[in-house]
Image (cartoon, rainbow, N blue to C red):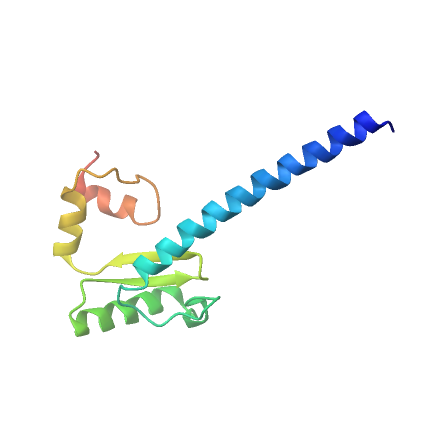
Length: 124
């Protein structure tokens, strides 16, 4: 291969690595912000890497127990971590749900809970 070809290959690899590094840096910065904000919410103490994944034996039983604990403490929402990268915020009180649903912020129309709520909320 000639010098020009090697220069092109090294340049292309450098661009790809730089792009990937910038994307990873931005993601880690966003993740740090999310962890900082969501860690202030009530919920079971997560493992530093695995989150609350070890608490799951039967997911429905876990959600029921967490909901009961949350209501007993007087919390209106709580957080459950799937590994340390995916927080799930669960609204445990109708007043909290009312505030979220009345806001003008865009809301997702997909997910496991939405079809359950359609009869009450109606189609948006």
